[in-house]
Length: 240
Image 1 (tube, rainbow, N blue to C red):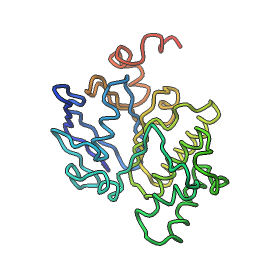
Image 2 (tube, rainbow, N blue to C red):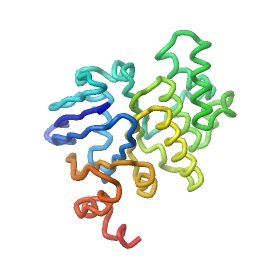
Image 3 (spheres, rainbow, N blue to C red):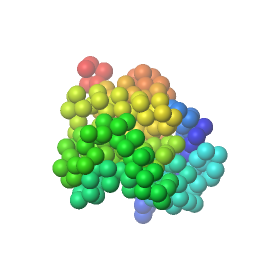
Image 4 (cartoon, helix red, strand yellow):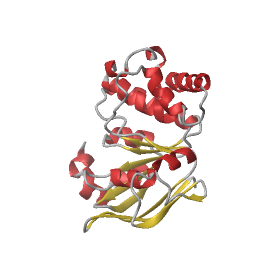
């Protein structure tokens, strides 16, 4: 396992946003993370990435207990996340934005530029390198967010709703991009509300509800689980 989460619990005041959540991710796997709003998905990302420290439990990444490391140090180990609300450096070019990620691994501008151009081609932004980031469409801003993260050379990439707001055509393109990223050796944990997309891309799906894990398994089995239907999908999903 490249990542093991053991009994992760996080309180905000008297409210438990996560309750003893345990799971693992195999290297090279694409794991989907679903659940209703308020289920604890973003809190889990924050705990895994080091933005929040869990009140109980631990995070083991690549064999190392990283529970006490902050986000910058976890990023250096290769545990990297994107954000649902994309905030590029608006007045910088697309290339300059991605180079910010590259500088995590090298102080050399030439090497940083080379790495940035490589990941921009991978995500479909190669032709936009000189464009100001503020001029990008929603779809291309999502791609930029992924590119900046990839430029840090992650081993595990936590993707927070990178497909939200995309057109059907853009959605298909993003799914293909995620498969290419995994084929380059990056393990993926993906939060997504678009069920058709998450069922297509994931090899396994983890479901949270009220901060608790209620299912963890193959996409077809999870989609047919009564607890998941009652908590999230709804009976209408079965009739669709």
